[in-house]
Amino acid sequence: MKIKALNGFKDIVPGEVELWQKVEATARDIFARFNFNEIRMPILEKTELFARSIGEATDIVEKEMYTFADKQITMRPEATASLLRAYIQHGLHVQKPIQRLFTIGPMFRHERPQKGRLRQFHQLDVEVLGTPNPRVDAELMAMGAMILEELGITVSLEMNSLGCPICRPVFREALLNFIDDRKDALCEDCARRSKTNPLRVLDCKNPTCRKQVEEAPSIQEHLCSECDEHFNAVQGGLTQLNVQYSLNKFMVRGLDYYTRTTFEFITKDLGAQAAVGAGGRYDGLVAKLGGPKVPGIGFAMGLERIILLLQQQEESADNTQIDIFVAGLGEKASELAFPLAHKLRGEGLFTAMDHEARSLKSQMKQANKVNARYVLIIGDNELEKGTAVLRNMESQEQQEIAITSLSTELLSIILPHSTGGNPAQTHDN
Ligand code: HAM
Image 1 (cartoon, protein in one colour):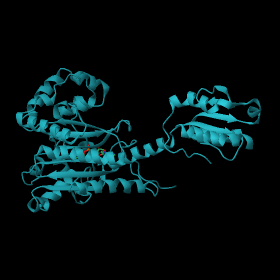
Image 2 (cartoon, rainbow, N blue to C red):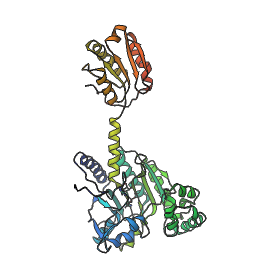
Image 3 (cartoon, rainbow, N blue to C red):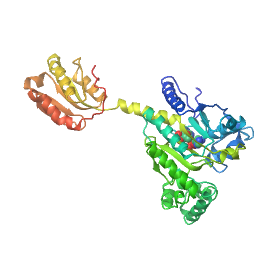
Image 4 (cartoon, rainbow, N blue to C red):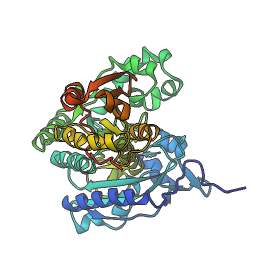
């Protein structure tokens, strides 16, 4: 029996690896432009590191970690905790008061594998340690947006503030009261975690829970004055940098370490795995892990999700439509078709033709392959009658057009609805 890779673990083979290299090179180039330095950490860490940072009551720590040696050792499920451990261990704050660090590598979570969700996946991770400045929050989001934009990926940026240890407990209390009245209508997971981690109820994907929390209190309205000021300043920064964003009061993130700003880059094109990247501020975390009292902020992007989006785009580029395929059958008809195709292209139609005067069947196949909306058939019979046949490939309807007015007729039928979709007018064989 052949041995295959484990479920949720993937090879990256030649042909695909080039796309990974392109994405990594683009990200590295932009990290350098934003003055980030690379750091690399080991894959195994003490389990306690993740329990203390990500949080005992999170899905990741509760059920998704690959642990060994009596659960004392864990394969990192994310990069932030390891990076902070290394930052503290090597006293990097002493070398530079503000560290801007990035790392790229594999992470491990025992999740149910799906499109865009793996058990070994890769993150581009960045962290800025040592500054509470809201400009850095805006700058990081702008950098994330720049990476995706340069790769040609369209996302929307959603942002929220989760407040701080002063204002969040007040909000938590208001939310608990709200949830308490609706407890019975919540899904099993939410009913269980409503006490330990009530904020997670806000971003539950279950439609019933969503409905229940529609009117839930908003954390944005419970921020203390300092957090509110920070939140406003971040938004001001994003506006200055011309970064589009929207506020999402339901975004709470699945890791417990966040304070104030949280954000996600969301795509519509990957079904349920909508987050291409996500992050936020974690001002108390370095101290909690035994380091200096410095604030921090960062984000991570999922490389597999970026690659999937690029591959989907490549496929849909192959599928772009052309307006018309001109099928000349026989030498005489091709003689007429050749300058006609050129004229149509000159007028703006996305046009393909076959120069080999192949059979009608073969030309129809080619027309299907290039997704032609119309096929113009010019054969000996048609020539004799002084007409050509235009077939609408979608409706299969056919109409005869007089040869003498071919180009004008074709343009008036097709040009108003041109696909404008295929940049390469070179489908000729
Ligand atoms: P996260 O939201 O858990 O945050 O993951 C960040 C990104 O990693 C997600 O948006 C997604 O693109 C990708 N990702 C997560 N899980 C999987 C998976 N199973 N398969 C494929 N891709 C996945 C963090 O990990 C935080 N450490 C981010 C951060 C950095 N916050 C501050 N600094």
